[in-house]
Amino acid sequence: MPRSAHRLAPLTIIAASVALLAACSAPPPSATTRPGDVCARMVTNSGGLEDRSFNQSSWEGLKQAKDELGVTVLALVSTGETDLAPNVQQAVDSGCQLVVTVGWELAEATADQATKNPDVSFAIVDEVVEADNVKPVVFDTAQASFLAGYLAAGVTKTGVVATFGGGNQPPVTLFMDGFVDGVAAYNAAHGTQVIALGWDKAAQDGAFTGDFEDINKGKVLTEGFIDQGADVILPVAGQVGEGAAAAAVERGEVSVIWVDSDGFETLPAEFRPVILTSVLKNTQQAMLEIVGDVLDDEFTNEPYVGTLENGGVEIAPFHDLASLVTPELEAEIEALRQQIIAGELVVESPSRP
Image (tube, rainbow, N blue to C red; front, side, top):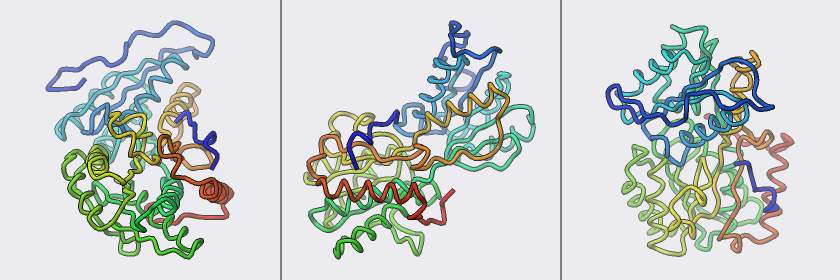
């Protein structure tokens, strides 16, 4: 895949306290500002606003909508489970036309408030809630993680790669399905026998840390994979994935494939030498489109599904590890990418949106 093709346009509330993360006053008029006083509220899950994942990228998309479309935006950060429903309630009580919630933890509160407030538009990221006024924002990450798995199989020196998740949930296992299928595709194309640890697609079961925040769990699990010979690791576990990166740095000769955002850009600089690529969700683009639909009175509950074709998912540049990727391997990945876009190659998963 040509490297140029990878360069993508890739408060906290305690009791009643709310920190303002963006000015609520209307921005200066501009040529792109539509008429009307429109605002949006976003409620994060317990991962926080700077989670290097879809809380952060969704917020970046709403800030872009503020700059480009003239809406006012505010984020309410959930610090724990008890914040979730009250934060959604507060977002609705603001009177804003659009409420964005992030992740499966907020599905119940979103469905409840959507039923009670049929005139408010809701969008939920990385989860599906079925209601007339709720738009699911989901991503077919299996498409991009298939490319990442093919890449991992192409660069491994030990013939062993691995993946693990934070929990056995469709948005997590979708990555893992695509990854192991990509490894299998490389084996079929090259007559190799690269082993993928951590996930059995047929059984839909594998290695999980049980949460998305305990970094040490990710480190311990990754060390176990390295002990079994794995030298490319795909953690699908939010902040827990930092433990995988830490283990890769300490043990050496191991690389990591990040998820959701470009880990090379969002993780601490100490991890840059081990980031091979990232499986990206372009949540920013989705947020911009949804806000535009609200402004134009064209909002619907039809899901936004990010794909390779619409740029909603991708793999990031290879950055400092580009030397590991031969021109031949890069060309093979690009050919597969085009086959997926054309519908000639379908990456199957029971978790596919």
